Length: 192
Length: 319
Image (cartoon, chains in turn cyan, green):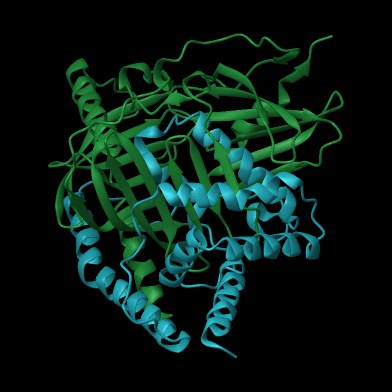
């Protein structure tokens, strides 16, 4: 196998990992760069999505084929990178280790710097502090599946996602939160 | 695993603090000066969110889960580019430009939502506490340090269970909200977002222009379609109605209701469309759907279950 073929094969594997949500953010950024520059890779990405739709038995429309081009056009207009490029591409194992170390460092950061802030905050308002309670619980919804939106139908979850993003874009009633209003959208990881 | 558990415990500490709203009590109407002061802070915050160049790492606490997010906000020649990417779990991302929002989720369709220009968009022109008095109490709660920076804490507390409120920790120097809590009527946090690190980049000084009618004073409108909305949840009014085209080419009508802070949309589609039957939620965003008069109706918004249920209960097709 030539180096070129090996590279293409690696990128395809990364595409699969991205669509499975298993690619680390740094690799995702590099892959997005590659997608922006490589038309055949974009076509592969599109095919992977169509295969995913077919496997899940979801309806797909011709318009979906335009998504990759629209993403590419947007990426072409985007001068910034999500993370700085590295000179050497780490191996998968190195990459995993680095991500693990980064996560561990983040948590240590939280423990050392954030916790005192929170406790200090508690102290500031100790006079008004109430009994310790975690996040407020909400009204429980009827038991459903564990999927996004508690639905076991990805096509329906996608539709609700589309409605939600349209709503948030049309009505930034909480616009004072800026991009943070998408935290709910991005920040929900499903149990895996 | 134990590291994450410790992280969770750290944020529980914040919840435990409870941030008592000593400045504004249940029956107290804040004096005009205080309202004005809150208004100035919130306006500065909205302006900072729009015009500053910044990037940072956030933690997001919801339903006993802790996520790490990366946020980038870049303004160049008045043009805004934004990215929010999950750093924990599968990569999920939202990228937003002036006329388009792109979303990537694992196992989901890539979403691309176009913004159709000023006529259909309500601008992010901040919050005017003077307009919220019937349904929220607004006040300055004190000060706190977040990400090593001094902040003023502003609360907007709902007066009933039909809406959520916010508690913003506003950076004194830049006016960015370094911590935002979504809170209920009892001021209990439902979700918390906090910067753990933030970097400000130089700006070229060209502020992005506001496009469209600000939601805070969008005029109340009447439904011009055949659909009627009887007895909407208290305080919510229809401010916008238009038709959207869905990815599969089908059309849907969108009706937007707001109380000047919280909002929900009612989507009406052809009855043959697949859709939600019953309730669903993702965090504090609730949705409810059912078939009404042969059409598929879905209500969605960052409002409590009771609100979306009340909203859909009043949907009728005019004879």
